[in-house]
Image 1 (cartoon, rainbow, N blue to C red):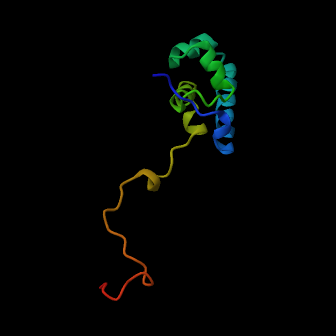
Image 2 (image 1 turned 45 degrees about the vertical axis):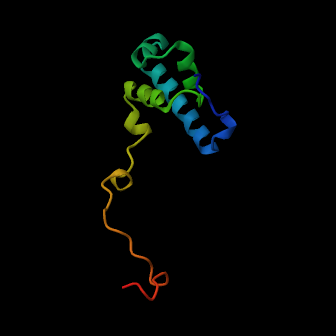
Length: 108
C-alpha cells in the first residue's frame, strides 16, 4: 500500500518553517564541509532527489532522515537540542488529587 502524504499546507506554519531551516542547515553544512551530494546520500541511505527535497524543506521526507543527515554532518545537538528530562523522564505514579472546589462532600 503506498504511503499517504498530507499536503504541505496541512502542516502548521511553524513545522513548515522548521523543516525549511533544517533543510537549509543540511545544505549549508554539506557545502561548508565540502561533502558531495553522492557521499551524503550514501551515508544516510537516500537518493539524490530525496536529499535535494530535504534541503528544500520538503515535508514528505521523514523526520528521521532529517535527523540522520544532521547527525552525519555533526550538528544534530546544535540544531535540535534534546528536550528537558521533565518532558520525557520518569512519570510519577501518584494519583492527582481533585482541587478543593471539585471535592464533593463524600470525599475525604
